[in-house]
Image (cartoon, rainbow, N blue to C red; front, side):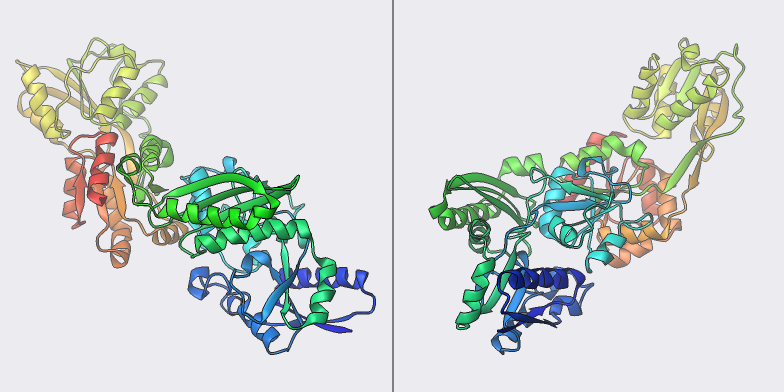
Length: 560
């Protein structure tokens, strides 16, 4: 008896089909087999997003047509790629024993999901994986990934993606699972697609001899589990905008089901764990799918809006991650996806002209937390510290600056409500009734405005303004630009005029404006806002104080 098997032409599809043929020949020595390669729509457009080429069925339709046209006798499918609704004249005659159902993470350093660097780039074309990745690690940045297994594995390389995701079963069948770069993701962190790891043997319903032949390869336990999973999928709807992960185990005549679903438009997720007798597996799956659909499509409650007001919003922070950790975490806690793109680099001024050790001042002024940090750092290299200035009165701009001063054990005497140099001068002169002849030390950026020094000098004060740190534009790499465009930001947060000038000078503003002319530019204070408006960056939302919490709330209000 000759059987013609149809298969896609990828290494994995061919390997799976040959595996089935080998198993069949072991139990039926009177059978001969032929393998015929059939190209599907998914193969013809290997780089197109899965949703664009039809989602489920993109890798099966042409093979099913070949079955119906009697060009082949058996199609071997990865069950997760097979739609729940089949053509009336076709049937799944057998489901083979399931291979490992989990997903795997591949990275150059062999990272686990929880050890990936903050903000790592992870490649996957699966919205199911994306939703569960972001549920576990909201800081991750997801990139579209298509192609066969070797192509996707090659993307996990320095200068490209930090990690990619594939099904463990395919890697095992291709004998790649021993690669040290591969880490299996436990089911507690990532539930598989319905039927993942199992193979479906499809044939014509009226081809009775072949149907009977294939029953020799049928695994009843796997069939019950995946039947229940596919019942969840069918009741849920399986749309490409509503990712679903589900896994069923059969034990002691009961089915144990775990399921996860997400609505990618609203960010609502749902999880269900339940069990039932084996005879009720189909009903359990149907009820679970309907319950999941209801939960993720329910109108968002006011509590959800309050807890996650930035759900699924994409925000760029133009500070280095080590400077923006608290603000980035604040955004992510509100549900946002955050991309860190530092636009400036800050470094200490070499040989900063520090005052003599015994030199005393009436006032010490700090306009930024960076000024406090680098002044303290410069003093430490001469065996001195900020505590040497505890007798001086101190003026500061911004709560972050004041907090760093207090951390050093010093007291802030003057801090204006408005976070500008002009407001600081006004507030200081109110506190200093007789300014003439008073000595002022002003450690600051080498690019700082001269407003404070000029206005205090005009009132007779003796100002020693010393450049304590440099601010330079960072070279933005091509990968940074590509990542930014792919991220498609809705809001960009700025913390200094220097970052704004770098944003404009680098051409990023023009590049992004062509993509979205309504990107919100969020500013930490009026001086940064002025730089944005001078560069014609619109629209602008401003935090009236140099306060990250207030800036976050301003972004929430603007994006809502």
